[in-house]
Structure formats: structure tokens, C-alpha cells
Length: 101
Image 1: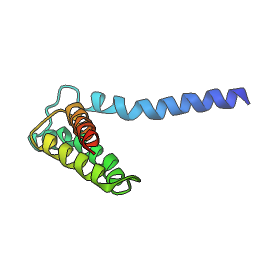
Image 2: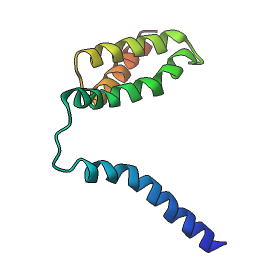
Image 3: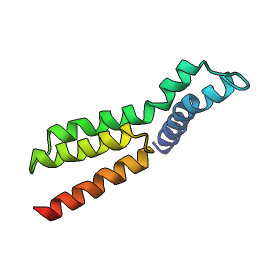
């Protein structure tokens, strides 16, 4: 039983590590095309949007909170802010908005 768990942990570690290590090995010393660099630069924002969008639509209290937070995040992202700044900015806007209600 214990050996199965140990082998499962080792296997999970390998399949987690490989996708992170392979790009470094395969692209070492190579320049990526500008188009691919641009696409990869937007991956954090796309991921953030995919994670947050369902929460905007299915918020339990009031959908206005979700919409106002989304608008704040979209504006910050459009202006080129870092992902952390986008998240913290939308949290700050919602904090101010909730204090006004």
C-alpha cells in the first residue's frame, strides 16, 4: 500500500515536471518567432479570464459585483497592467463599491 502511494507521488512529480522542463530543453538557444512571443505573452490574461468569467455570471449575491469587478479588470488589462495589478485593482474597486452600498 505505501509503495503504491510512493510510486504514485513519483509519477505525478514526473508528469508535472516534464511539461515545464521540455520547453527549456527544446528551445535552448533558439529565438521564437515574434508572433509566438506575442501569443505567449497573453496567456496569463487568457487564463485569468477563463478562471474569472464563470464567477462573474454565477455570483450568488448580486451580479453587479461581478460586472463591476470584470469591467475594472478589463480596463486595467487593456491599459497593459501586470496580472497581479489587474487582480488587486479589481479587488480594490469592489471594496470601494461594497462600501458605497
